[in-house]
Amino acid sequence: MTNYGADLLWVLIFASLGFSAFAVFLSISRHRRRHPPAVAHTAGEDVAAEAARKVIREFEKNGQSADAALVTWSPETLRKILADDLPDAQVIVVSNREPYIHNVKGDGVELLVPASGLVSALEPITRACAGTWIAYGGGTADRLTVDNHDRVQVPPGNPSYTLRRVWLTEEEHQGYYLG
Image (cartoon, rainbow, N blue to C red):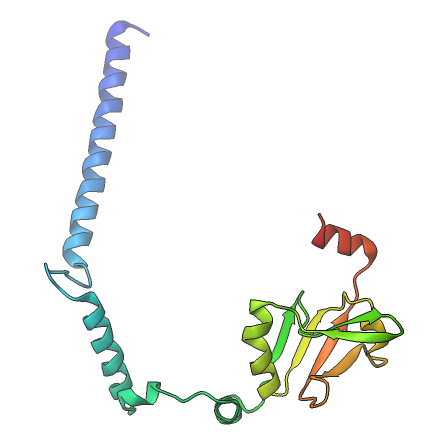
């Protein structure tokens, strides 16, 4: 290729890149004109107050008062909401933490309630809704306390939900918990 041919090729490449950049610029500017930002923030605008007004408008639009969001929660309230809004629903919790652990101690079985944020948060809900909690049975007496379907009714003394234990092989336990 001659020098003239090489120079012409570079001119065409740069011209092509320039036209492409110009086309992208035009496309972006047209899009911005057709689709202005949804919320124009002004100096001093209170975003939290606007969010609160939006929630109140949404409640009023749906025929509810703003006070409807202020529910006094109790086990009965939760049961009623589930029965009314989700009549065929079941509460099922699946976790690696179980809410009750049975361990062999001396000649008997000791019951432990683990200190766990997960258990503290979900156990009252599972109890109130007569749910099922599925978890790894890692206690030394967990297998001794279940029925033939690996279930135990809990809490002891006042059973209100089912704890369904699953068992891990030693290899699974090592891989998941230790490794």
